[in-house]
Length: 223
Image (cartoon, rainbow, N blue to C red):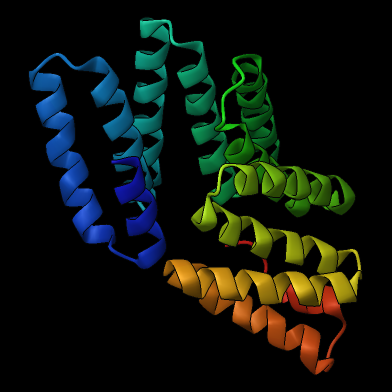
């Protein structure tokens, strides 16, 4: 299911994902599978956010966090904290996002989890929105190294795009151009249509030179 969720969210199959997640939550609950219920509640929370039901999304993610804590799985608890931070980032509460994602990253790194790269990516997204672009670029560079080591091409496409945006905001135009080109190539290779469209627009800003690189990236910022 993790791969299905990643592909569905990036390729725009939101309605199918929501239907699948609602069914999976009920099946997991019926069979007493609390781990499965926590995971599918997270998936449903993402689908609820996408359709604008923010309170329902937050409720799903909080329920998932409660289940993870009850199960005593500290690594999964870290991911659940990150997920709440991700929702806060998406809804503009950056201070709450920073607190939750930082707390989640601590737990995940303590367990040597390979999910640390993904969490660090979203920490970078929050830092970028807070205007802390140098710290954000460092997060993305470290995440990119981890994703390449894991041969995670889909994740690499996402992080390359974010790193290009950070370089843009730091006015490192040459590095931004190369990184956006790599991001666009990876997006096309992996079918990441959501990021491909936005990264193409940003690449045009860097190449076209009709506005400053930083201005272009601010206009087409994190979504």
